[in-house]
Amino acid sequence: MNKYWKTFASVCVTTIALTACQKEAQKEPTQPQTPAPAANILPPTPAPTPAPPPQPRHNYALNQNGTYGYEPALSEDDIRQGRATKALVMVRYVGLREGNYVLLIIDQNNPAIATRITCQAPCEFAQSQVMSNDYVLKTETVRVTPSSLLSAMIDDAMAGQLVAYGSRQNSPAASIATNNTGSASLGSTQGQPDTPVDAGGQLQQASFDCTKAKSIPEYLICHDPQLAASDRELASIFQQAKLAVQDQAAFTERTRKQWNYREKNCRDKDCLIAWYAYQKNTLTKIAQTGDVSAQ
Image (cartoon, helix red, strand yellow):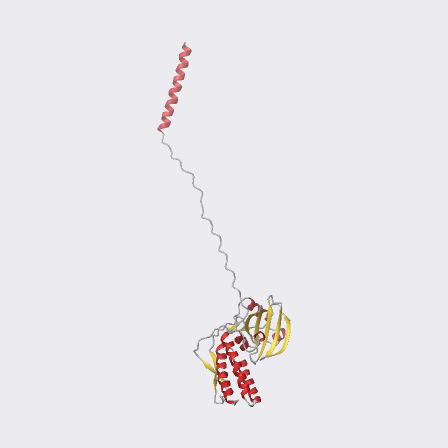
């Protein structure tokens, strides 16, 4: 019996002790739990902006109202002679004609002489024609060697770096006036607006075969409806004057001089318009009188 009471008392003491511990634990202040620090979230790195494509570079060193200057490389002989620079090679771009790129290399000392360069993409070879006015003096086919002066000109044409000559003139226009002797002379028309020419359009119908146009005036006539119409009209008046004159030799000489003047001096539409106006007026009087010297 005593063992029973001892065991019972021991259980009671243990129960009371556990209850007291739980109450003490409830009295202790609860420590607030600190949330775990959030991971550092960085904004997404923007993708790098792609660099703009490089602008195509031209090879010419000078652009002078549609005439482009190219600087030739110095040869070993030039270097030995102490030469530092060479004269620019001046070029005019005629345009793309029936799939062919056409350029004119100008002789600055003799405007009547030009070298016409014609090639078809990819222009590994080109046809070179040396011309004097309307006459072809020499024709040859040459290889377009990379990094050569000819290659630089053609590369600019194919890359669209050249503007067809005559499509826009920035220099003062030229006109033809009559001097005291009755012959045509070149006069300045400062202040007149520039006249655009359809240098890249289809061929017009002139009094001559435009597929065989060789000079700058002929190219301008063949690609401008107004000039082509003036050329056809003048051709009709010319035939009337030729039939009316008695001195055919003098008439032929006059025709040669006037035509040579146009080929040598007219490099824009305004000059050609003035030339046609003067010729129509003069040839009409010759047709009416039969006198070659009529003005």
